[in-house]
Image (cartoon, rainbow, N blue to C red; front, side, top):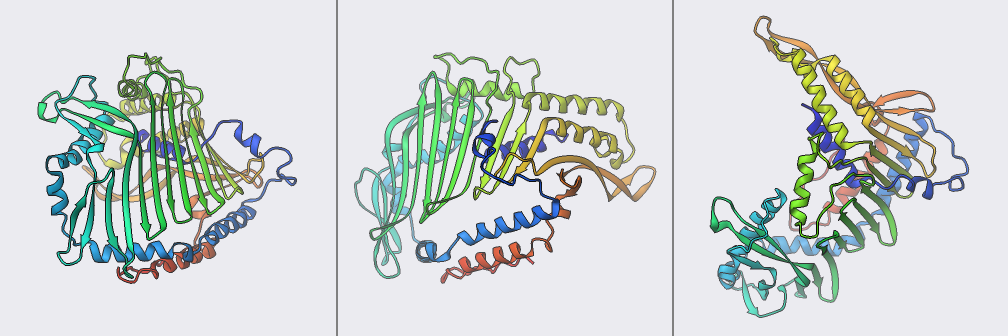
Length: 459
């Protein structure tokens, strides 16, 4: 019953926090932190508060004020401009937008065919220059271009340019509908797609996506987004026997966050040269809940580094084993609690089930906090906890009863204490962080002159 929710939590965690098992020792070895001492729960509160305050202090609203002012004016002035000229220019080509969206959805479900489809949609067909006409309050066609270009002016009359480029090798994705031939399509996607926003000669925003597919060996995607002096870079790679990803966030030249995720010890079914990557990936969805599958996900490990001061490591020892163990646990308790007269007596609300599920999570999932050394400072654990809620029973009628659920707690080995997240990260203990966050958010909101923005109040 609960495995899908917790599986989602685990996977989302690993997307942002991960690396290989040796990375911690490589980066934070014996000489990197001379003290290398365990901190108490109270000392760690101060440590985390200090790092959080430093992270907030990195941001300076003056660095982004120009692009925010441009976006504020752009939305205010051009939001209601008419796009009919753009639609008319593309005519049938514009069907690509909806068709491509449906095609991507289909690809994500693994509904792919190698056959030639009835329609071919090429990204390269979408070119042209369109300029905002203040008299007609519309976007009008200005001429041909190799890219998609939008021209408009800022509040001071300086020309601005938003441009979408497509370059490199085009990869073809085929989709064939089993029920309706009208939805068969082929989408040709370029290997490099980039977007930029310029105000005069100043480039405020750039965004580049690169796709590299080697039919028999690997798929790689890299993304780089720059918002004035804030840069976010990501990379994801899939090979026949490994999947990994990474993210890097920089403010100017300073790295404020880095993380990666990988599955280094998967036992995967080999991919033939003739097999489509989409078909190959589809097998992994089936293998997740099939304990007899030849494909095994193995362990997943994760790592995050905040300001090079706080490190978080997350690991799932065996994803396939975790998923099948959840199934077995549900089946076991489903047989025990085959019939119940009141919702609160359902097995997933019982202490026994939640205690066993907490033990299962503790067995498969590890979450550890470090402070620039290999000394374990805190560990994530799971427990069964009760709460009172309203329910209705056939014989008992309306009443309140005790329910149980799995809760996550933070264990501190130095003083052998555990706290729930709510009890540890209290508003009182982290009031300065809350105040600084609220102050910074409202400084950014004050940069908007045209769009009415509601102030942030976190207290």
